[in-house]
Length: 633
Image (cartoon, rainbow, N blue to C red):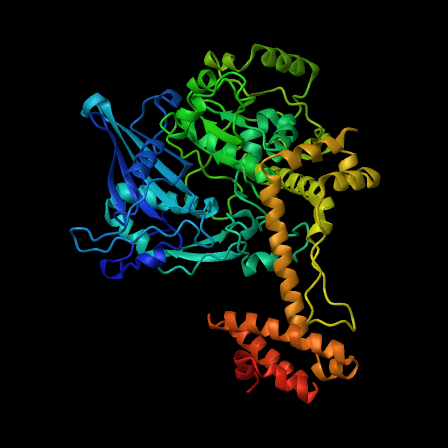
């Protein structure tokens, strides 16, 4: 397969690479070959030495489709694309390799803005049939590794890089790395134009509130907390995997989407099984995208294999043991027997067609480039098939249990969970039947994805809305002192919250879409794995925003006006408060932050003004402190 006609590699003189700039986006590029004698082997890793031996094994084993999942006929070339998520493990210290090239050291696991606990791997896999080769063929994968789940970027980038590597070899890594090193730092939640060769990728990155959290609130996240509840522009992502094809992968079980949304919302374990890696990873990504803008704390694995080190733990769970909250995407039917304890199983997709298409890219991807191969080739959906006969067939399939997939693949959901949310048939009726034309199918899939994603965004936002008062920042009231400490955010008590919510009701939007026991869904959510990390993060954002508002109020305060209307006791208290804030600004000023310097000079002037109106004996008493005397000089 030839590379995209819109891209041409740089010349030799243009391939200068800045490794530090590349690592703002990418951990490594890997070329992995499947060797019949030795198994998966990493042939190339750029930059070298950035993975531990344990991580090299994890990446290598995750970069090839399970043999049992491939149902296509043998053809000269078969390409597929998918992605995985594995935990970082092992440790090492960077050292110099024989070529003299510096090996970058592993970033600190708590580095701000990096999900360094996990690696995301985006894979371009090529299987080539050739009777002259041993066993009649070979397999090789091109892999992009990153700390960030930027699927809207790495999908189109991989569609350039994969074919380019098979055209020109190792030079492709240098060409792509040279382009990446020219990119600005990632700007979560914003549209970025990123040059790649002579082309440009226009990418909407996921918002900062959907990325990993290390306890320190970024400016972007604090600012985003003031944004409207619902975006007016659907091209702007409001969570992870905004480019996933929800309609395309779940169209065989659309009525079950509300059940799946609820399962992920409350943190229930889910096993998603599909015939191919592209389909199972698209299903996991699509499901994760449905609960935006909620931050996903449940561990999700778009493509999970028996070689993952965590599989041994899952396989050792005994009857009655609680399965950990996670979403697993698999293709190997062995998981149906080995993970019998998992309570929710979803079967999606259909056996891969006999073609050399790349079944990976979403029809709604904002990172699309002209000339790229098409995405999934799912069978057409008849949106009028919700009939009593089909309902009876679904009941029979449910009774047969998930082991029926061992004989024939069918799309279905097996779960003992009793949902509270009701399917919204008005949304299903708005979906457009794709028809038979592939071009019409792609256009209609974009429309259907927007309808579904908008609905579930509204559903999640309305569900989370009752928690809003606990994240509301206070501002100084007119005439009050901005120099005192702001009041704390309202304390949260689960029983009080549920009691108050029971009195108020769920609101018009939710009351139409949930059963009478809707309050139980809030109980399940607060006990689940997603609630506490999300709540703590929102509180941290609110506290940061409140700090910013009070700090700005101190910058705008007229100290002379405040002194004139204050009693002597209030003036003394104001002096102590300003001094405390000034010392905090001095600490920040060491980091040379411009706004800290401005605030420092404003507070120092205010402190001097308050000091000048204090009684002489009190001034002498205050100046006995050497540090304070230095400030007031």
